[in-house]
Length: 183
Image 1 (tube, one colour):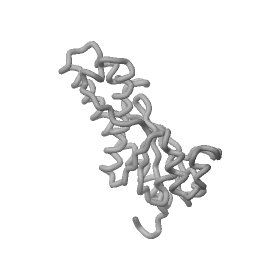
Image 2: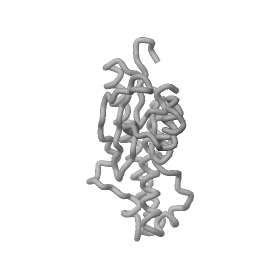
Image 3: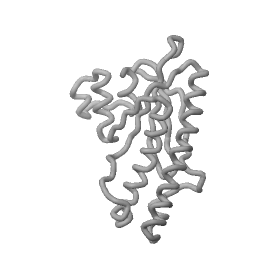
Image 4: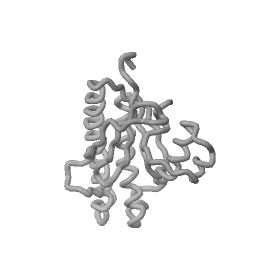
């Protein structure tokens, strides 16, 4: 990172065919929101749910539908995140970390993913998070993944908030990318 640029962090929360993006900069104890955007991960109408679309097709066709959606999501994520990095760079920030919120990676086959409505949503969430994570890595960002339910505790520890606050007894505004600001 050039010495003249301040470090910044992007935080992502994937949705059905898009991701919310927030750019934070400044000290971890009091970061500033620099930018908020919607990052489209499909050119199709929202909400876009490829596993739902693949349901009812043969396994080969279903795989092609999901693969095409994953490829499109990654390409659009790379383009969109690249634009954000360029915009923030021209405003004196060097984005160094991307934080992606979400659940875990689904541990099942496509056949199992198509077997229930909940499994389809799990697969779609992972598809969009993976697109954002891979695009961020492709663009040279360090990627930090965290479960939403663990974010506050991890962020609190990263900025040395007292343990009783980290346990959830204190209330503070939720800030998506705290854990990455100092690391």
